[in-house]
Image 1 (cartoon, chains in turn green, red):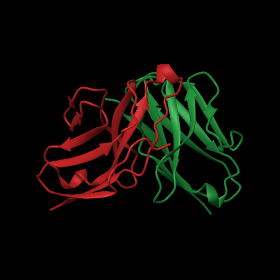
Image 2: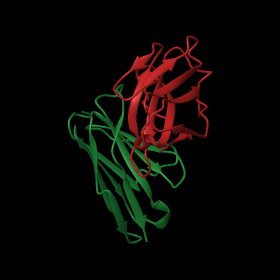
Image 3: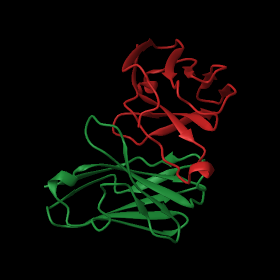
Image 4: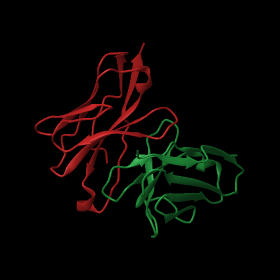
Length: 115
Length: 114
């Protein structure tokens, strides 16, 4: 149980374009989903927390207009990287929890490369 | 802020028990100890968590000292697939803080040797 998927697993895009990443909880309903970013040889850094049906809460330094998060259902959250630039190239990982207090289960990650 | 201290790296022979230590000397009474691991280029995998009692599941055992200032994750029979970075995370009960953040430090890189 507690399986989280992400799509796509990797994506290459041109600078200035937008990319959408999906995160799905496959066998449970996730009230809360989290988005992390991991640069090479670094640890995970939380970008934002989203609760189903409400606006996401962004961590300090993360631009909410650049990283659009939608959590429209209890099994799906999306992260859209708008006007991507090479410095946005990273490993994006989502996690989901049944509710705000529960253990977070992580997806397999999406590797974004912006040319 | 990092609330845990872990060795940077460890080796373990295949088939032997892997004991991964973690110091969390400033842990508070309402803080849980969580362990995750991350295999290269994958998302973190939840392993186990505990508050003050020792815990065991199908993956590992978690031994927490009586004063709760340190803990040890035990993989009873390490296999090559257990090679990963292991993160020990102290997490405050979200209901008390309004946050459910997990702070991933640098972790311990465990290498299981054939």
